[in-house]
Image 1 (cartoon, rainbow, N blue to C red):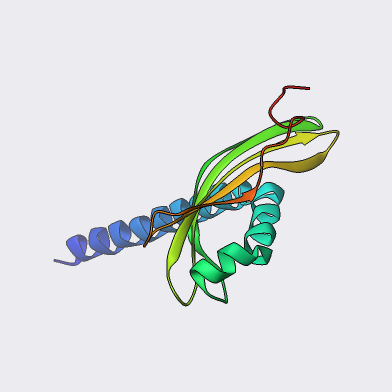
Image 2: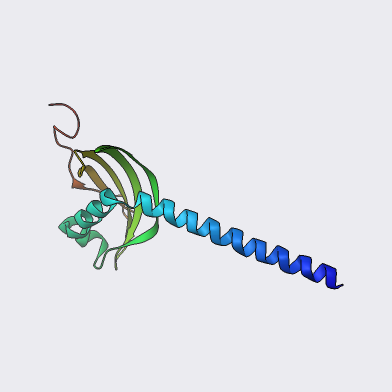
Length: 133
């Protein structure tokens, strides 16, 4: 019986260590995605009057962010999606951003209001961000 108890304790400890490692790794990956482009978009969303009217204040993001961020030297791109919630309703933010010479620029940010399916253009596509100069 004592031999089985040791294996049970060892197995339980192993699962705790593995779970801790996975949680730490996921946290690191999500923090990498939630970089400067994400922060810039959140500032834009929180300061947009149409968004404030539709969602209510305060506007808070949910924890999870989907999408990808690519960086190479001073350039890069980000295509992200995350949920925000206000006192009235919630919505999904879609953003496209680019990085040039080490600085992020929001190319387009759109909020889709969940309760009404209204699309709010938070940051509009410009000629330079769409590549049609």
